[in-house]
Length: 98
Length: 355
Image 1 (tube, chains in turn blue, brown):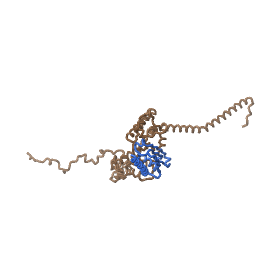
Image 2 (image 1 turned 45 degrees about the vertical axis):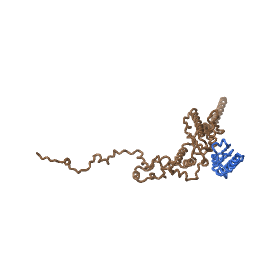
Image 3 (image 1 turned 180 degrees about the vertical axis):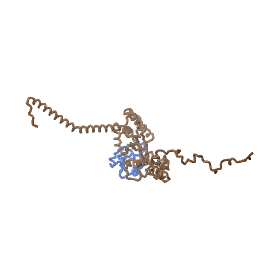
Image 4 (image 1 turned 120 degrees about the horizontal axis):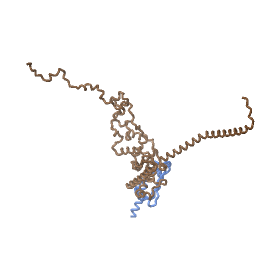
């Protein structure tokens, strides 16, 4: 996953939800070790009782685009492809600009 | 002069059939019962356990025991069985320097708690030494947790039920346990085929931690449920409003860049306390118990003694009120009697009534 162009990650989820919690946690595990110095990461965790509360994950990119991701439908692979799709266009623009 | 007979010495012996020489004692060896050592006491009560076909240190394992994953499985089972309080963390790409910094700060904080406890409460257990922050292999840990939760063999070895005088005991009849099958019920170790079957057969059994067991996991294991130590650990690893991180002036080491970055990347997911699953809030609640388990016990004792006093008061109240009423009545009667006597001295005594 190309994480170079992400500037902000904000998420709210419950780790006790087997589906959305797992997706978000795996996404956070994909961020590089120096992610905290490069992007603003805001993680909010719900408890066990609120496991069914809808989780949210939204990203912000360098060009200002905001990308809210629907965790009910998307799994980690889908999120990766979505992020990569936008990141590749950003990378191409950067390369062309020199 | 008599003739000299040259006889071979063998012919000088008395005529007797030449058999092999057997000493006198050995002839009666079959009758010598006194020289047989007595059997050990336990063998006279129950028969000796059947011969094990596997060495006790190497019982048959379901998966090949020389694999690293088998040994990790065994190790995680032992960790789970020996630590009543476990915190689960997700570690997001921590670096080695960050891990070492976090471990250093954690052990320093725990040692401080231990010293405080030893000084103030006289508790010299030094539980903090046994606390360990370790990364686990998630899949193997999940499997080990299942075995620990759902496989409950009888760990006490049963005494042999065969009586020593039973004719089958001394014979070569195969007893059930001596069969060298790996699926023998006699094997009680966590890597046995029995354990594997018990953990994997029933998919409907849930221990509650399943959603947490994915991704990179780290465990903080406590050998004892000690809220003071938990509080110290939480203030280092997952600081929040109720567990503030140590101030920069008090503990400058905690505010180094490596430690600070590492703590940000550790996420507290939940806890397992005495087999029960707690979420983050629950873990914080356990850590916020004032005065630890001793304090909790003191609260309980105070509550129970309060209840006791209340009950005695309630039960006494009826008797006491009766006593007060009766005393009051007696006082009244005495007053009346006194008043009557004072009045009676002036009056002539009443004529005796006919009985």
